[in-house]
Every structure is written in structure tokens, then in C-alpha cells.
Image 1 (cartoon, helix red, strand yellow):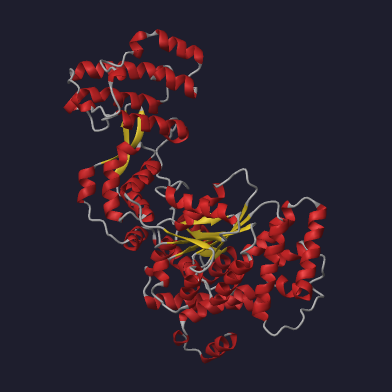
Image 2 (spheres, helix red, strand yellow):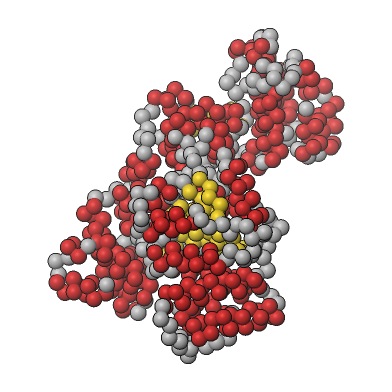
Length: 574
């Protein structure tokens, strides 16, 4: 056992191993004959040994292994293996079958940084790994392969909030590392009704920018530029309003170009977007994937553009689309634009995948990965969490976070190994809300007042808050909002994006922060923030901020204002 593991994975060098092998006492694992145990052997049936004698042998073996530099995790594994010989007096951590032992060894081999060499202070950190979604990921891979034959243009992933739609879609980046594939991501927002088409425009603009930066061949760039000029013509100036990076690809002077007259500007813009994507994908060094998240919040103009992009890409083998959408949200509004759009996708060459909540095995995989403990050790805890969270991955994570903050999940020293431990009796007796929003709001209410206020302010602006907005509201509220949001980020409620924006760690976090306020307070904040942003936008001629301010003011409602002059100004802006 040790010889195979040592040489196969280079845990110790050969000189150390030779010394280790020459010491027969070290290789004697008590009275356990591993060669005589089958896969189905139940260790609990072995004859009980003297507890003191057994503990002395186990301690001696583990101490010698540790002195030889064997990782402490492997020492603990061996101690659990020896413990199984105690019969009915064994600890809960003792092995009950060789299947569990082989499973643990495989995890050590596949993820040594997490299960073998992880000797740091245990942290409660959710990785980017997906759990219990092998079938769904295989379906995405299959759809992507069909794209090469022109039989599938993309995938629509549906499911309720927190089931892991976005996480599953983003793992597509690791689908084939050898393939020079680029992925571009856009996310729609429920509260921040940004300028129509802006989400898709940002995605295509990023594509233009990356194409200009990555394509080294001057001949390819010139050919792409010529095709763009021929396809877009004088309308290139109109498209440049949406795609400023287009000027990096074309030699036209957009400042002097005047768009030709067209009867339907919206239809013309959709055509221009489609031609740009078609041309850039043809000359791109690798396939292009476009991921649009939270499509249930998309505006009607964006939905029409998405449909046009899909229709024009049916024969394009270089473009692949991924859509994430909460189907439970759109079912609430039959005949709405997004509902009708979703129904239309059922007739397109798209593969539809519905994510349900995780089963017990999937939850145990998530808990094991989060706590860096073998699945056999977390199985009982995972069963309780699965029942409380109904298998929703995001809620499971929030429950773990709550248990840790309230001291029910704690560090315990097992020999020389520090790891997570818990009291199942206490956890079973806890009265934890079955609402993830209630759980998040309870955690937020424990924060200092300034951090709670920061969360409330940020939630009024939507899923993402730009630094321009932070500076404007800092001046308006006479606080250092940036420092407050940095503290909030340190608590895990928000993330900092490339030092320029703050983003809520999940839609449910933003929703919980928003619902901490009364309806009256939300409307007052929207109006006050909208007026502050509007004043700044008008002074600096910033159309994007002006659009944001109007959206905020409209969410506040005209009846919040008593000043007739301000009411007239808002009416003019709309």
C-alpha cells in the first residue's frame, strides 16, 4: 500500500523510502491483512483488540510516517484505516469498506493540493468546480460538437435562482484547452435597466477589441477591414455608436461619416450587428462563444437582436451561444416579450437543458470540496444540509457559511491535522429558515450600520456598481462609499471587478440587500440617487449616466417629489 503510493506519486524520495521500507515495524499495520479483504468487506466485523495496545501501535506508526515527511493527510488516512480494526469501539472516522479507502486515495491523486498537501488553516471557500452536473455538462459538450456540423447553434440553460446555471455555463471555458476558443460574457440586470442593446453591444465590442489585439497577421486584418467596410458601408458610423472599438478595425473616419437614411433604424442596427459578428467570426483565429446570462431581464430590443443573431448564425460553424434564464420568472408573465422569445427558441436549432436542485450525492460532493474533507466524512452533514436547502447549491453554501459564523462548524485538531468538525446533534436541533433570502438578510443585519447602508445603496443600483456611481454617491451622501464597499467585499457579499466596479456575489445577495429596505425607503433612495446622478450627467455631458439617472428616478416615482420644477425636468428627460 505505502510502496505503491510512495513511488507512484513521489511523496518521498527514494533514499527516504528505502529507509522506510527497511523498518519492518513501520510497515506492520497492526493485525490487518489488507490482502485478505475484499471490496465488500465490512471492517466492523473484525475482532476487537485491546484499545490501549491498538492506540500505541497506531501512534507509533503515524509518528514514524510523519518523521519521514509523509503528508499529514496521509498519516490521518492510515490512522483511520487502523482504527477500523476496533470493531464496535471504532471512531466514526474509521473506514467501513475498501471502496471508501480507494475513493479517498483517488481524490488524493487527482486533487493533491486539496486532499493531500493541504496543511494550511482550513478555509470555507467555494471553488469554481461544478458538482453533480456531469450529465448536463456532457450535453453541452455534445451540442458544441454538433455546432461543427451546423446542427446546433447553442444551448439554453434554464432553472431557478441558485441552481448553478451561470457556473455551469462558465465551465465551458475549460471544455477544450487545446482549442483557441474565446468566450464573451454579458449579463442582464433586473434593477439597472441600462441602455437598450448595451449588454449585447458590450459583448460584440469586446470581440472587436480582442480581434484587434490578438490577430497578428496584417493580411488578415486588412481582409477583415475590407469586408466590414463593404458590408457596413456608410452605416458603419451608426454602428460605431454602439461599438467604439470598431474604429480599431476599420480605417474610416467615423467622426466625418454620416449614416445614410434608413426607414427602420432598429432593423438596420440588427443587420449591422449580425454582419459584424459574421465577418469577425470568419477571420477569428478560433471559435467564438457568446454567453448571455439572466436573459429573463433582457429588454425587448435586445431580445429581437438575439433572435437576429441566432437566425444569421445557423450556418456559421464558428459561433456558439449559451443562454442562462430563470424559467420560473418568465412563467409568471405569459405573453411577455421574454416569454414569447423563450417559446420561439424551442423551434430553433438550440439544445435546452434544465437544471434541477442537486441530489444528496451532488450536495455531498459540494460540501466535501468546500471543507476539503473526504466525501465519506461529510456524508451525514450533507444529508442534513440537502434536506434543509432542498438541494439548492447556493443555499447549501449559505447554510455552511451560517454554521461557521455561528460556531456550529469549527476547527478541530485531529492528531497533527487541523480540519473542520461539527456537532450533528446541535445542527439537527437548529431552526434554520427555509428561505435563502431570510438567511442572507439575517446575516446582513448582523453587520455594522455603515456596511448595511452600503449594501442598501449598492442594491438600488443593480447587480453591478461602477466607480463613477460610487464617487457620485459618495459626494451626495458625504461618506466614503468605496471604503464601505471594500469592507462589504471582504465579508463575501460583493466582488471587486478589475478595480473599476463592484458586483454582488450572487443575484440573491443583491435581492436580499434590496429587500432589507421598506418599499417607501427604496423609492426615496432611487429618487435621491437618480437626481444626484442626473446633476452630474448633465454637467459633464455623460449620456450613459443620464440614462442611468432617468431609470433611477422612474423607479422612485414622480409622486415622491413635491417640487413642480423637478417634476417638469423629469418629464422632459423622459
